[in-house]
Image (tube, rainbow, N blue to C red):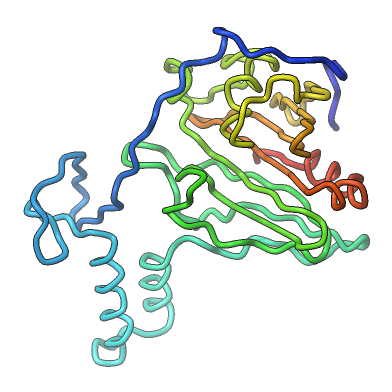
Amino acid sequence: MGVTLFSVSTFPLRCSGSSFPRQSIPRRHLLAKATPEVSHESSNFKDGKLDDGFLTRRSVVGYGVSLLSSSTVLGVTGEGMAVVKQGLLAGRVPGLSDPDEQGWRTYRRPDEKSGGHGVGWSPIIPYAFSVPQGWEEVPVSIADLEGTEIDLRFANSKEGRLSVIVAPVLRFADYLGEDARIEQIGPPDRVISAFGPEVIGENVEGKVLSMNVAEHGGRTYYQFELEPPHALITATAAGNRLYLFNVTANGLQWKRHYPELKKIADSFRVV
């Protein structure tokens, strides 16, 4: 059961020097190696791989195609081939449940889905949320202009869209232990000042209409409503990551479907 612990409505929020220092994280090429050893170093590129034995992402995809096309020759079929496909094509994995009596479906991040934001990070703790019929997953590219930390997108052309950002806590704060909490990162006003621009792409000063603090299953969630742009943002932390769940829509969608958009935003949980 959710319990609202704190509520503030309709106030101007000023950004000042209290925001966390934001660091620019360079995008790295995805690397793969046949051995369990991992290195952050890169060497000279040659023939689709690096001198120290690492393969580029393009090479890995090429080798994957070769493996799949030669499966009958190698005798790799059934479950064995499924494992190969999963390992090479990890990324988008269905996670939607069947519709409930109201037509809503629950998405849970599959345990098998790839992700981790680099070497040394533990697997992402799954999250879940609910959407009405007609909302579908939208592919996320590693070259996404809005950042490599976007883990998931959903959209409905008539109602709105959503995204989930999963970012390493160490980008914004010192080591907070094995299971960070949003309260350790800061109070609600400081969190939205620091991370709001990560979500909407612009300063949030004067745009925060309301914010609430809720608790679900022993975990604290900060909930914000912004305008403009129309956005409902939920923030929490788990493991060594910060989760930012953003539901947004244009003016007409917001007017027609606000109750549904609010229900989607309120349904977000780290599980």
